[in-house]
Image (cartoon, rainbow, N blue to C red; front, side, top):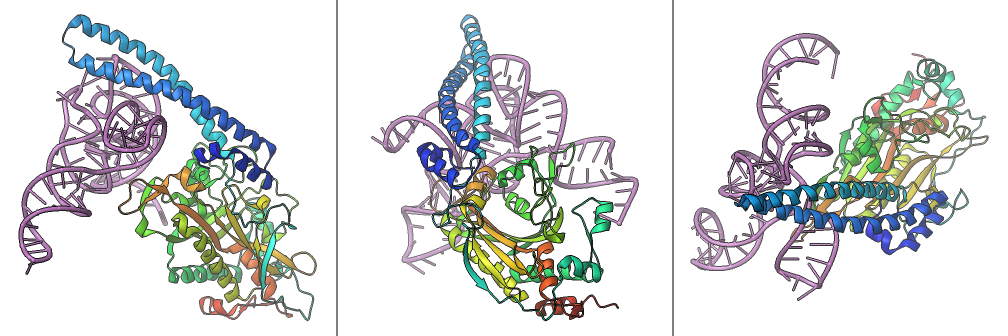
Length: 431
RNA sequence: GGAGAGGUGACCGAGCGGCCGAAGGUGCAGCACUGGAAAUGCUGUGUAUAAGAAAUUGUACCGAGGGUUCGAAUCCCUCCCUCUCCGCCA
């Protein structure tokens, strides 16, 4: 959620930002509604506060008044005030709810260096690291490899849970667990606090992070008859962890690395690059999350990106770094970098596929989650900045490893850094 | 799941329906005392929001949401959470 005061003072900037982001035209109208509603809200608020002031005054003097006649006069006035006030308060509440609802739909402002535009043409490729391997044979995609080596079973996933679900088997299980270990250990060493989070979270927390659990285009599974949703990422639970708290500046930045299962309905994603493990309803993810001061967020964003790059460098997988254009930023993101790994089976002849991303969300999430910090010797509090970044999304990392490390004999080499964890050098060999 | 107890400020802990944004303590900050420190004493110490140059003043907040009342931290209802005991269970 943006700062209401900021929006009111910068209506044109906020609108231009929305145009840059190619959000739907209704959002631009929301901004006008916000301005209008704020005006109405202030007028009613003034009335309500005046009524309450008088109410308090009357209530106090009633208590002190000994003369029965005067007393009952005051009681009568108090009764009247109560009726008027409660009506006005209802109006006020309605206005406030609508205001917040509409304001919450407006996306975050954008980093001045983020490329403006939409689509892959507008995304800026910052660098390519590593060289895609040349195969002396025709490389398979991860689906073929997975089937041939009995590593991934989509048919059974479909039978048991529906399309988009799968069973990992045999060495794929070991690979999945090894990647979790690898990422967790690396980040713990780098000063991130390891956390295993719940896989469900309250609607309110989802909304604070910027998800929309309600509505038909939701990406989120909800649990019937509760206010709980299956999380789409540990970003939700990690961010929610400190909701409604006030931190000390000296404790910032705080870095966490969380593990959770991630559930996504992928509504409306049919037809998009969705082969095999690339777009699934459930996967496991190791996620970085940080709470910082406004001054720290920029540098820390680069730190998260560096971690993501190191992980893929150590795994020996070529990748490129994308500075995400305005239209592809999610609502809460102020700036976002994506890592796209080389996947030899991605389309014919290979291609880059997104494997991780890291976002600097500024105070957009902190405002609605009410996460603040205070500085020593300074009065008042400020909202923290939040950042998130994927360490490893297991599904897509597995694609990259299977496809990049496949051998002519059909087996798959284990990346060197994972050998000590997996305790073997080759995957898929019959025991 | 059953029975009971409880949720108050950074923390502990009082609180008769009006004088309670809330005693007292701890912690923290400043000042005094000291060669310096400890101990001691004094003073101050929530958040948000509106008005104001500021001092200050108004409003809201004692788990959340409703209700009773002229007036609720205090009474009633619902929900959430924590603790203890019993049952069940990975």
